[in-house]
Image 1 (tube, helix red, strand yellow):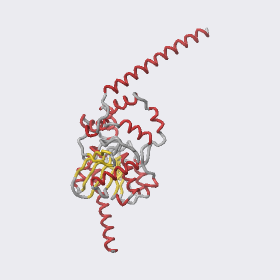
Image 2 (tube, one colour):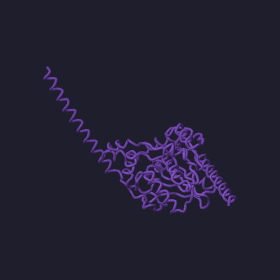
Image 3 (tube, helix red, strand yellow):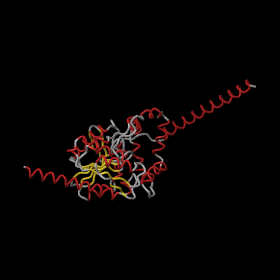
Image 4 (cartoon, helix red, strand yellow):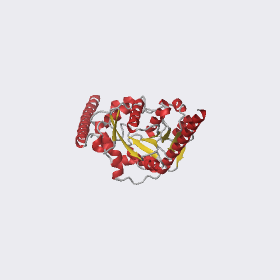
Length: 333
């Protein structure tokens, strides 16, 4: 009886092993098929007409509005091309500012050339500013991009007129989780990446969840604005590197050292980065968070006028402080 049981067990174990091997073979063939059938990476200029500028050996994509006035540089978050500022930026420019939206690599249409570290991002931003003649800008960072303005204000506050943190707490994230990238095995991860980043359903779901309480219908053209940058050559490897190293940021003690004019602006219905995060960062900066009614994590798209007004207010305050310091200097001389 026991011998018969062991025989049946071995027979079923063999069958399960064969079935599992067959499943792995089918999935592997399907993954290779997806990789072969979907487009790989293309040069940034093949996907975006520009403008571009060479900064520190990297081709940086950007957009610009306005010809006169004090400068404002807008920095997007994860998977955000500079297009996301297309409604906020013209309003800020109409208020008397030169506005630049900077594609922070490895996102948007900037060349995928690391390192994707805070030091690397700051060096690239400074080179970008030098090439375009941008002096002492207001820096606005959304989500992941919020760390860049804070780091710039800490590194050299004389080069920063003020900072706005929009739906981003500027703190680091994901450090110590680099081992997860060891699970990303070719061709499975490549197939999954291409399917996910070209799926209107998935991309649309992510955007609607981040939008706020009343997301609109997102048509094909809107979704393509987010999907197309994933096709820039080197994006998959760059995202893997960023995930392996963790998202750069600054710590609360460093936030407390910032003295330039500053604001924390947050969608009141943000479900991606909590209001607790907004309050923690605002407390460290010594300000009260400005909440945007009806805005979620993508408040710059859901409530662009409210976001633009917050940026304009901070720019006005920075200008007043700059004027006050200049007057004090003249009196003392």
